[in-house]
Length: 249
Image 1 (cartoon, rainbow, N blue to C red):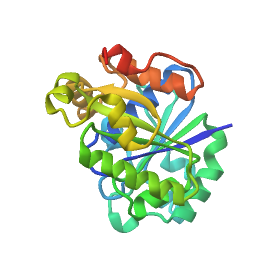
Image 2 (cartoon, helix red, strand yellow; image 1 turned 90 degrees about the horizontal axis):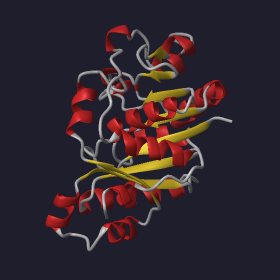
Image 3 (spheres, rainbow, N blue to C red; image 1 turned 180 degrees about the vertical axis):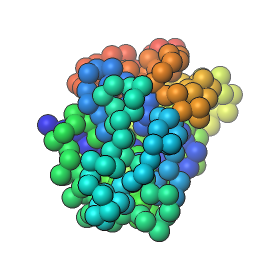
């Protein structure tokens, strides 16, 4: 049975799309067939990270609006066997509604082991559409108060929508910076403030950001990939060490 997961963040700049792509690559390594759906209409970027931007003709708005067959809006990421992506519309005016996206996902989800939905930041209509199609959520934050506040807003909205299975991903974590800032006593205090169960800590990694911006995601090994692999394993019911142990926290 396919798992449909929305990746959300209460504010922009948390690296949510990078986490979406990194997780998708890690799941493919576990021999899972994965569809990554970009729902950030007007700001799409997953196609660039996966190096398929030149191939795009149709997007999610075409698939739900009858402009093309659904399969025509799904693209193969040729360098990552088993990973597929559906791009967001280039214009925010073409944002899809929650009911329409839910119907689309329901029609295609049996073809995949995982469908990851990269939602726009915040709790607006784009987030509502992305979350409406999901069974569970990963909330991506950075270890700072404004990001944690955004997490609380997202968690509240998810609960209102009936999505209670939400887990926390702390992204771009650098122990030295976290300790120097001294905003939280320790990582456990940060997690308690976010009021969401932790599933992964992704360390700060300039290399993965650079690879993503060059459209080479999944083609090279980077240090943070271990954290993504552990995140994927946890979604599969395994219990690898949390990254905070690997970081010596």
